[in-house]
Image (cartoon, rainbow, N blue to C red; front, side, top):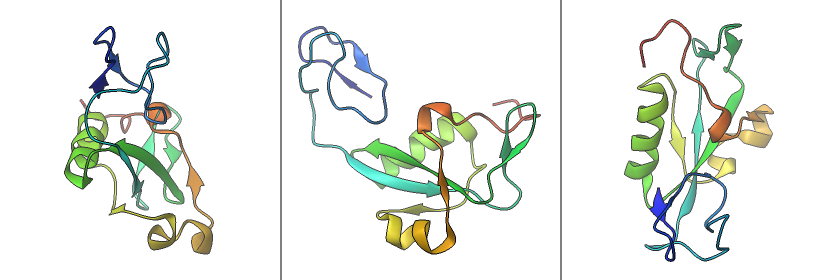
Length: 111
């Protein structure tokens, strides 16, 4: 997360690069989108929603930052990281996007 230039509040939205309160660009290098996919054994929430045909997008400075954000949310309960939707097979395999802010830990895990 990057802080707002004006108020230094961390910007937590994974899709925006502007502060909601000040509509100012955040400090730091430009962020890039990374596509992170899930595997057949991955699920989330109390209803164990299956994630095997899903992916999420993380805005980060680099792949390591994207992985760090995903690990903070789900440890290693995800599959692969890609730089493009084409590499990830989004269209080819009909993957469904789950916004990163909606991704939950895998139920039963203590993360």
